[in-house]
Amino acid sequence: MSSLEKIEMFARETRNLETQKKILFLISHLKLLYKYGNDPYSAGFENSSLKFNQRALSELKIITDGFYLLLKNYQKIVGEEYAGVLLNSYLYGRDIERIFEHYIDLLEIELTGEEEVEEGNVFLGIDEKLNRANKSAREGNAEGLFSSLHTVIELLLKDKMGIALDMDGARLGKVLGICMDYNVFKDKNSILKQLNENICEIDNKIKHSGYNPTPREMNNALLVATQSLRVLKKEIPVINDAVMEEISKILVKNN
Image 1 (cartoon, helix red, strand yellow):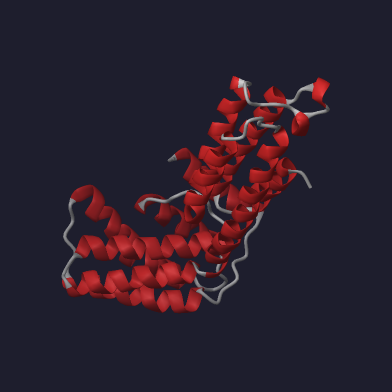
Image 2 (cartoon, helix red, strand yellow; image 1 turned 60 degrees about the vertical axis):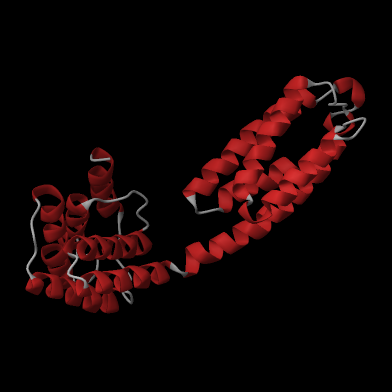
């Protein structure tokens, strides 16, 4: 498998949209490097001399910078190997391919770790936000409390329903409303209604009208979030095209 084919596979398989965007950027410039560096009289890219090919060298620098951003744990290695290859008296495509092979092996390791975090630890993120919510409640910080609880609900829905876009308070409440209309979480509409009334609506009032929740409202919000999460974590939502179409209209229209 060539360097380009392997990195195209990474782009298809990663579920992190930001990482995918960076990989697609790399792919575009890899293609340009092969285009500018391919000398048909030297039997292709690997045997082409790039030492005085300024366009190819510019693309190599851009690609190296792209790998540098992706390989956060190996940035020193990326920098050292790039500097080393430029010292070659005769810089051939095969020299470039060798460092690309190493970069791509490192990227595979990096992406494997990233996917484990993406796949297994969404509830670690939720637990962290719940801990922050508890801390805010103890400190009487209503804004921090409701902001954290809003994120808890959003993370849960994103994980359960595959929603990609961010949701502010109003949109989150509308998404909960659609879930109730279509009975997405079977026979759990009363829980969704409590989440909307006790968290989303109050969070929205805090953000848009400077509302100051009472201690009782803060306590109720924390209690509802904790109890609801315990139930909904185990639920498998019933999602059809109509549900996703309604949700997408809300999220895209307001984005």
